[in-house]
Length: 84
Image (tube, rainbow, N blue to C red; front, side, top):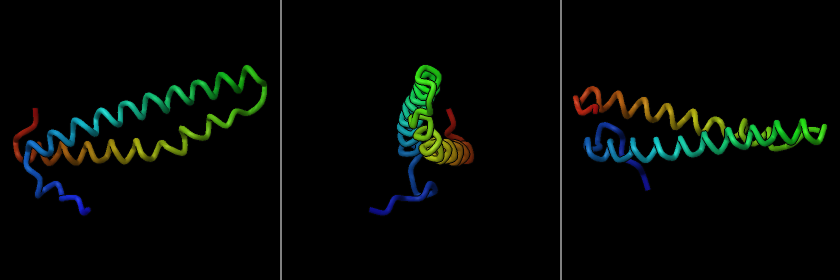
């Protein structure tokens, strides 16, 4: 299914998408931070390298893409004058 561009979406759809992306990005960033902290802790506790450190770094581009999408949505809402 092809998604609509931001120009074609209504203000309500943009606000709904913004809210869902904020929640998903926040949860993902929190879980990645927790996983990174656990990896560092296990690395120092065991004295050897823990593979948990690689996973947050590999999934970080998803967070960056979501933040970029949020900025685009906010700028579209700002041009329409619908920014909260």
